[in-house]
Length: 501
Ligand code: SF4
Image (cartoon, rainbow, N blue to C red; front, side, top):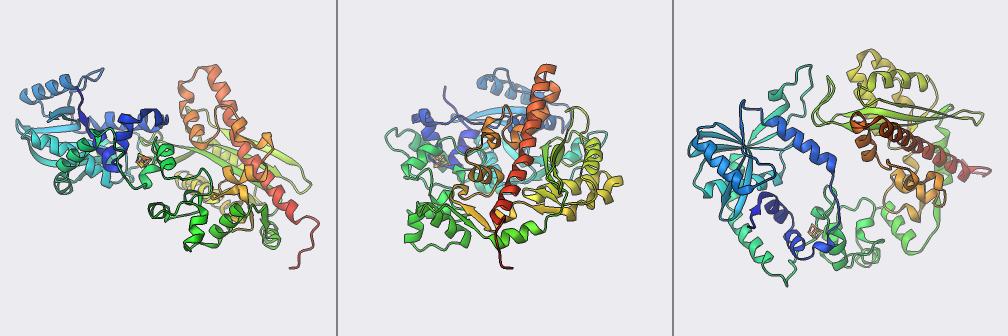
C-alpha cells in the first residue's frame, strides 16, 4: 500500500518537482546524506520522549505503519496519556507524531521535536500536515507545539531536560497553514500521476540547501547551466536564482544584460572569459606582508559540535576545539611543526589550552586563514576557562588573516574562481603539487570528516583509532603547511622587486 507521508509533503512544498523525479527519474538521483546530522536528530528525538514523564512508544521495528496505527488507537483507548511516534492515516495520508499528549479520547496536543534552535517556515508546513491528518480523523487538537533546543542552555553535571528543550506553541500559524494542505495534496497527486510531464519549477535555494538536492545535476542540465562560468559560480552572487529565472545563465549573459557587478565579480568574469593568467597588486601584498612579525605562527583549529552537550558548561552546538596544528617559521628560515589532538574520551580543552599557550609563545604574528573562526574559539575557551582568560585574550591582537590578500583582491588567478576559501586558493596557486593536494590524504579531507572521525574515536578498535588519529594529524598539518606555502608564494611575488612606496 502506498501512503503519502509528512516527509513527502515537506519535499513537495520545497520543490514541486522533487517527488516526480524520485518517482520517474530515480536513476538521475545522486547518493548523499549527512549521517552525523541524522544520528544527532535521532538522539535528540529519543531524549525528548522523556519530556512528559512515562510514555508509550507506538513505533514498531521494522516499521509497520498499519501496526503502529493500531498501537496508537489501542493506547488512546487504554487511557495512555503520552504516546511517542503516534501514527495515523487519513485518506492515504500517513503521519507519525513525535509526542502526542492525550487529553481525552478525542482531544490531543501535538509536540513535534526538531534538533534546531529556532522555528523555521518549513516546521509550520511539516506540522500543518499532521494537523490536517488528525483533524481529518476528527480529533480536537488543543495545541500544536515545536520542541526545539534552547540555544542558551548551559550543560551542568545533571542534564536538565526541561531547560535543554524549549516548547514553542505554533497552533495559530499551523491552523492558518493547514488551510493549504488539501490543495497542495491534490496538486501533488495530479503532478505525480502524470508520468509524461516534468513539473515546471523555478530553481531556487532549495536546490543547494543542506547537502544540496540529489537531482541538482539533472535540473541544472535542463536549464543549460554549464559546469563553469555560470551565475552560480560567481563570487557572492545574491541574485543568482532570479537571474536564472530570467534566463541569465552564463557570465556572458551577465555582461550582455548589463547586470550590476562588484569589482571582485567583474575581475572574476574578465579572467574567466579572457583567459587571463593572474593579477598581482605588489604594493598591497607588500603592505600586508610587512605587518607580519617573526616568529610566524601558522595556526589552525579543528572543532566538533554536539547538539546534546557532552561536556559541562557548554551550549548546544558550541564549537569544541579538539585539535590544532601549528607551523612556526623563524627569522632564520627554520620551520618547526607542533600539534595537539585530544584522545576522544576526555575533554580535550584543558590540555589543548596549556600546550597552545606554550607553543604560541608571547610574540610574533599568528596567521590563520579566516581568522574570525580561530579568534571566536579562543574567546570561548577564555570564557569557559577563566584562569587562562588574560593569556588567551593576549593572543588575539597577534592574529593576521591570510584570507585578506585574496578576499581584498590583492591577488587573483582564474583558477580561484568565485571562492576564496583555502581549499580553492591552494590548488589555484599550486596546481601540480601532490603534497598540497587534499585528495591525496586518507580518511580525512574536510573539516566535517575531521570532526566525525574525532567523535567516533571512542567507538573504534585500537588499530583503527591509531590509523585514523594519524590521518587526522596529517589533515590538520596540511592546513597549516598550506598556509606556509601560500605565505611563501606571496613573498615570491614581491621578491627582488622595486616597489615605489
Ligand atoms: S534540483 Fe532544484 S528544481 Fe531540481 S528537484 Fe531539486 S530542488 Fe527541485
